[in-house]
Figure 1 (spheres, rainbow, N blue to C red):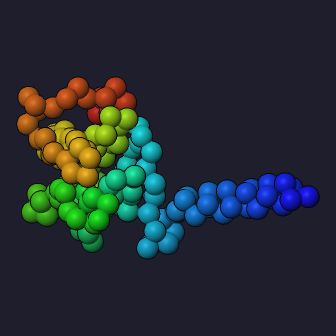
Figure 2: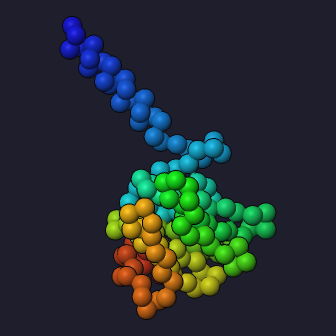
Figure 3: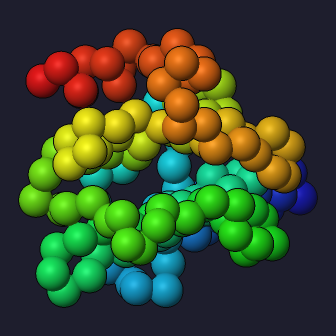
Length: 142
């Protein structure tokens, strides 16, 4: 009987933890958990294990984004004076190598933020970029 109760309690905890980990953007105070090899194509709050990404859209349709560490310290932010248009093709891509890729058609630019522990490095020089993931290359060519 004790074993049965332990199994039921364990299942209940597992189910409740699963429901709490799948946030939706219906609630403005919650975010979406990003897994590896994930495209972000809309404004919102996205978080991973060590970082969070905020994508903000302004009334004029321009987009800026920022990357924050686990303590909500800013690691990188797109310059607000150099924003991109939500009406153009853009994406943020989290690959499986702790790299956050940024692509936008406004400026024909591809950049990457390489997560290194609790910090990271932003690379925007095309000659210094690591190899672009295949999934992102396909998105860019479409």
